[in-house]
Length: 316
Image 1 (tube, helix red, strand yellow):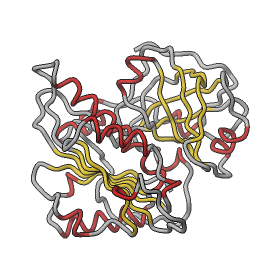
Image 2 (image 1 turned 90 degrees about the horizontal axis):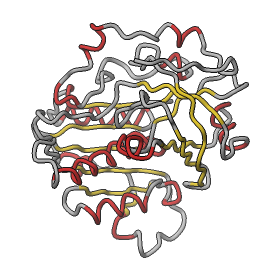
Image 3 (image 1 turned 120 degrees about the vertical axis):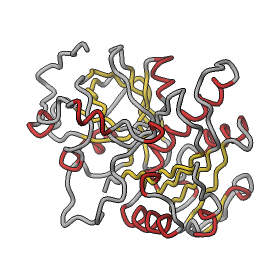
Image 4 (image 1 turned 90 degrees about the vertical axis):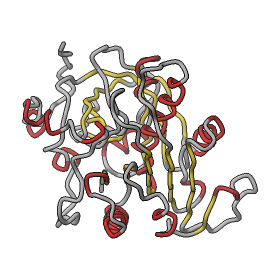
């Protein structure tokens, strides 16, 4: 694998250097059931005494060896608080799996960001770009994106994460239930787009992976904070019955527009909704605030869902 030289402006913290090489034993741990994996399943308490930064939280996660330069080639407002970045990558060795994140290196910013990729691996393969959707906070990397980042800004990226969906052609078909809270939609939207690519390819590839159905449950405070709405509606229309979505809002203060009303439920995702999807052929992916993940994971356990079929990603 070729290595890309990064200019001295990108300081790589010592903690990150320690995770550079992945041993064969670690790689073997990643080849689990269905090749659709997350090693962060139901492994004890999910509460921490203090808030750790991205590098601390992910020190034991898989990381690629390559750190790759990237250039900002698009910036849009996904919501009032979230910016969507499009990043051009020319390094052909740069790849990722749907659901993974990137270490985000910014010149002259000492703190390394960690952001889930919200685009599909197919977009990178076809156009050489990937996308991130970043909420405005005081955290230096997020603050830089919202206040200083512009077209042609240069950054560097490194892919990591054990939370992904990457089935191989010989794997058995599975159905997915994706459960997102707030900006936790990012890695699940990447997975949803990847699933759509599988459905498109099934018509032309006889020996490709045979994808099952996907149900997305997406909860946010209000309809303005539901990211990627139009994209998700487009996928539902393109693949009726194969991709479905239920939107939930928990603090809606204004009237829901007529166009959205058929798809919106006011209140939290219910036990009854989730229980009807329980089967031996279903994998569950959850991303959102830790209390939400803990609650839903315990609920699924009570339904009899095996812990090796429950995958989650928590960021804060």
